[in-house]
Length: 111
Figure 1 (cartoon, one colour):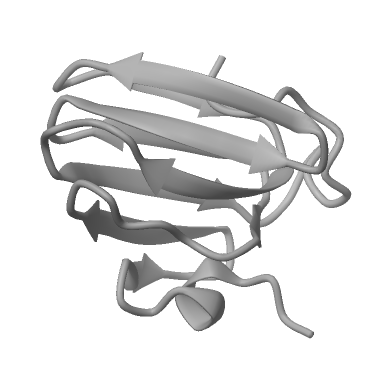
Figure 2: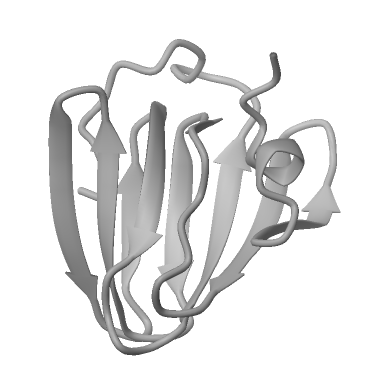
């Protein structure tokens, strides 16, 4: 079963650029929307709107509040998410295809 967010959650994730070194995803949702479980390799996230989300993996849960224009590193991870705020979420993810990525081992959410 694929954990690729563009396949598991195509209503939210769109591939907007890809080459042999990176893949760029655009993510958009509305308050109350939730994703199914999916995986990200090591990535950089850029927020295009302010939003509040809950990220869940197994028994671990983390709520994040992010402002427009925030740039964060994301360790490779598996999670599902929910927009728990009052505003739409809009972000860009730059996923790395090489390096230390691979198996999800990092902190849940942005660091």
